[in-house]
Length: 225
Image (cartoon, rainbow, N blue to C red; front, side):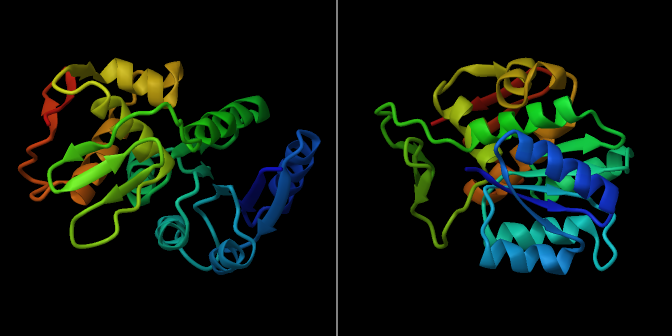
């Protein structure tokens, strides 16, 4: 059973999510603030986190970074903050998706299913791909080489996989957004910018001058072996 950690200080939302998620066979833990969420992630590791940004003890982006230090599991932000600045900050901190309140339960469940699928490794005999000083094993989702451990989130893995499976080819923004996030995201180019920046910080020797994860302005992205 998939364990979901719901982090929100609104009892009504927590109750509604608990009822709906349990009705669909999810195991649900809850936390009313950021500190409790970080402790729960250690003592009862979740498979997915639903996180409100407006918590009483710390900012949601700080909680996301704390979770990312502890776990690579998907994080879906559920927030009343609709400003694009908040969305970009949450994605840049390590969130995998962003749902604005008020929300539809069916939409949220669809987002949960989507990020859960992205978290599942696919063992199809894909060879290890060289990316600069790193060796990327897509089947087992691990990166070796370099001076430090490289940990990628499920969404980072899927985006990287799409590029590495098409070496030298231009992959359009539209195709990446649809394949990684879904058809309703085809105009959310800020998602791509944030995630590509994160991949470059983790995998390129000089993120400001990438040699392998390239941007084709206005068109898409390309992996150059």
